[in-house]
Amino acid sequence: MTQEEVRALLVKTGAIMDGHFLLTSGLHSPHYVEKFNVLQHPAYTAQLCAAMAEKFKDAQIETVVGPVTGGILLAHETGKSLGTRAIFTERVDGKMTFRRGFSLRAGERVLIVEDIVTTGGSIKEVIEVVKAAGAVPVAVSMLVDRSGGKADFGDVPSTALLTMDVETYAPETCPLCAKGVPMTKRGRTGK
Image 1 (cartoon, rainbow, N blue to C red):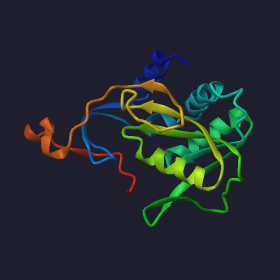
Image 2: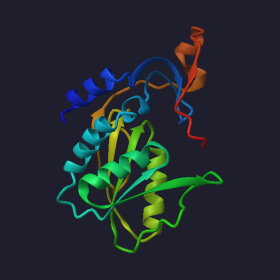
Image 3: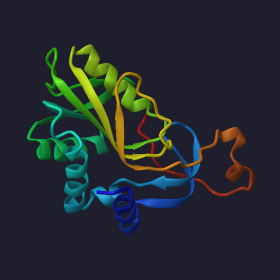
Image 4: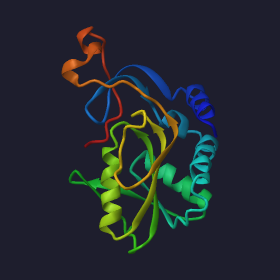
């Protein structure tokens, strides 16, 4: 899928939203991508994940890992497209980890998938969990990179189906707050 096709699908399903939003990072933004507006449609989810998988069909991926919650669906469908296993990480006492008997073996080649990335903090935590298991994080694949390509995962390359350069503001400098625009609290993952 092209970026234009991905954007059109997100607009069609109401996933790209305008307003005043509190992001997981604690930053504020006039735009938000509500992933579940598109992920509630299994056919669209399969289409998007097939596009994510296509980029890694020759990368000898053995397992796809995504963080809870949206990452579960993306990992499952991307793994299905690649013919691999799909698992997910969860937070326990605020720390990202594997649960439910999930584990990786030393040297296992892993594709990390994520839905919406603003700062990349959750993905960095997943990368550390993968590395701590001795596995190899081959790449990060994102549905939407809201950072405009600024999210950096060190030695792990990344790609996104859609890259958006969406402005974000610290709460104390947010022009929407200064104008008294009511906030919609969305995008909180409990961090």
